Amino acid sequence: MKKVLVLEDESNIRSFVVINLKRAGYETIEAGTGEEALEQLKHNPDIKVALLDIMLPGIDGFEVCRRIRASNSQIGIIMLTARTQEMDKVTGLMTGADDYVTKPFSPAELTARVDALYRRTGGAVVENADEIHQPPFLLNTRNRTLEKNGQRIKLTQVEYAIIKLFMDNPGKALSREDILDTVWGRDYFGELKIVDVNIRRLRIKIEDDPTNPTYINTVWGYGYKWGA
Ligand code: CA
Image (tube, rainbow, N blue to C red):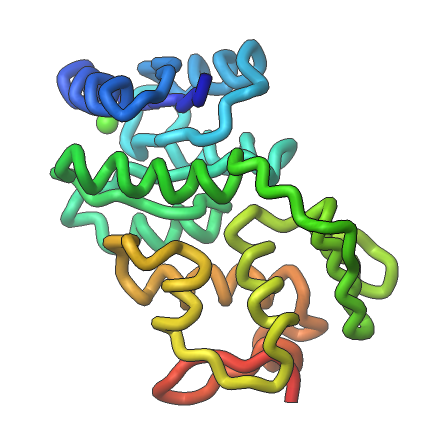
């Protein structure tokens, strides 16, 4: 069963989300507070995707996201943001979320996002044992892990997909649209900004000096390029 955690304190919104996910074939685990959500995750380690509301009684959605990511880089996380909280999207992604959905959202939009993330995280895409070695990086495409100088760098599934795309195309300028299409899928409804935010996060993880990147280079007005 495909399990999704739904953290939302407003019960009418939560029901709306749950009904639509069930209709799309998901089993839902519900939580009304962040504390409850973390507890549910402990009991249901097979949850592959979590939807996190931000404004909550007790700890907020960002904190929940941070705590999940501290021990779990595999689960897919989608933040539920309010239309007016533009900055929340960036904050959410910087705390480790993979995506966000802006309220109010349509059932089609919601399930498309969950489907896309589910395919990436739980998709059981078994690739051949393989390693891409581009010093100082070593990408293992079977375990989906990245090492830099022999040190493991923890990546989310989205970050992994971006790095894989870069390492498959060294030295090639990739447009933000290319990256969005490849990593998030062509049916993705989101904005290009999500690419930039993930790149920012990746640079913090992999660059010697994130303010002066040498691995992920910006191609002004176009996108990004791996290496020189
Ligand atoms: Ca709320």
